[in-house]
Image (spheres, rainbow, N blue to C red):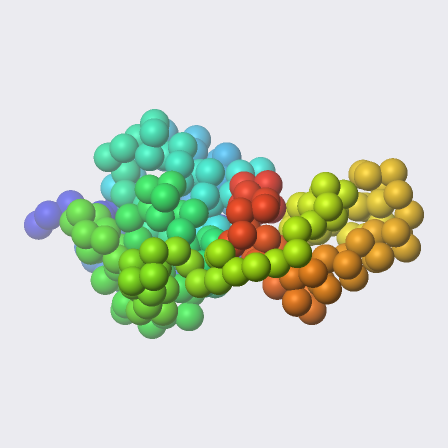
Length: 223
């Protein structure tokens, strides 16, 4: 009998890890050898256990999935990386593929599809969720993610600073303390940002600024 595929799971939600582990290990061809609760722990456990496949979430404490992928590929290039996440936004997809991810599957996929993705990734294949594959194909056809070159009124340096901190999940109060301005001033900056970008939420504003290249994803995905 061939040895089972050695898998590391990295996700900061214990219930999610438990569910993924259970349906992966229902297949005798897969063995979960380690679990990590954050990106830094994932790096340490990859070095310790030498899994064939590291299954990583995108948003994790201490080190996000993008940087964890990048570092795994530099320090342990033989380890295959499969992203398993709820995020299907263009900036995450393309940043992770640039970082060296070998596959990108959404958490709402059928468990059997995720098992197949782990096996295909271990075998050297590139695996993309159908929704992700469509976005990659669209970029291949157009040359860039949609609307990256559209004309938008530029943000001021202070507005960029506010948006970067908002993307890190800081509240208005925390942003104000960081930049030494009042909550009301932060609110005003966010209102200006929404108006310039023609959006109505922080998530939309951060996503659009990422696409435009005004902020970089590593600054906003630390958690």
